[in-house]
Amino acid sequence: MKLERLAAFADGDIGGNPAGVALMESWPSPEDMMATAANVGYSETVFAVPLSPGRWRVRYFAPEMEVSFCGHATIALGAVLADRVGEGSFSLDLNDGSIMVSATRASGGLRVELNSPPTRSEPASDDLVEAALKLFGYDVEDLNISIPPAVAHAGADHLILCLTSRESLRSMNYDLRAGAALMRIHGLTTIALVVPRFPRHFDVRNAFAAGGVLEDPATGAAAAALSGYLRDIDWPHEGRIDISQGEDMGAPSRIVAEIPAERGSSIRVSGTVRRLS
Image 1 (tube, rainbow, N blue to C red):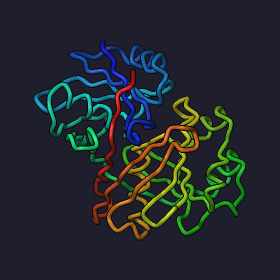
Image 2: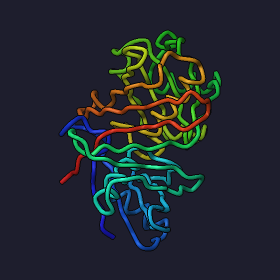
Image 3: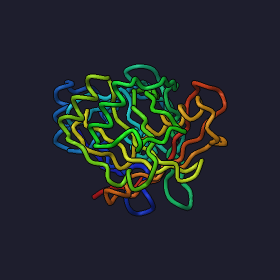
Image 4: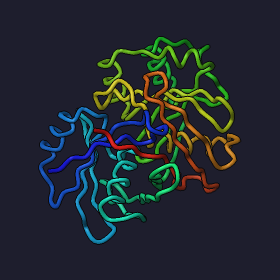
């Protein structure tokens, strides 16, 4: 198994979220894929097997769990497929449903776009919000109620907590084991802490304790879930938001999410990719 390492949603030649990418002719066991992901040590490693020209069966593994959908690993996979097969679009069959990823070369390098699974959202329960605030050491006063707490879905469930200030976001800290327990109890893949810099630009930090990772520097699946939720509450996104993530952990990342008008429809998430040594 040849494994490639790339950083998705990079900010030029720096930052982005590392992912492992393995293209294979046949499947190893789930235990072997989990062990490989743990050995690689990134938040996710994606494994792909060809089904037919332009179509691949895909599975994602974090160090401690299989993940139903991972945005940044999909972006990294799109870059590898572009190098191996050529620029264009590819159909990816996930454990539950199918998505598309496409890659094109531009002056800024290779740009990759995915179309997320369908989105939905619902208000977060009071018990979940209370437990999450306690986990991070926040108070109710730290919440910006213009974007109420919600569980948003785009291939996986993410808790969205909007904070009142960039300072509160910068101070994010929590116990990994307690965070993993909370996320598993509530079926969450991540918890996204967000602050609107402008109506169309968000600063984000994303806790991924469920997968054994304290924080992701860029999270495409959560970006799609957040975008779908903003559409559901009629936030003034004007069809697109830009997300800055990873800055507080020294890995600046840039995510673009395009938001079609139809509620529940796929979100187009894009970014650039850089190869890791």
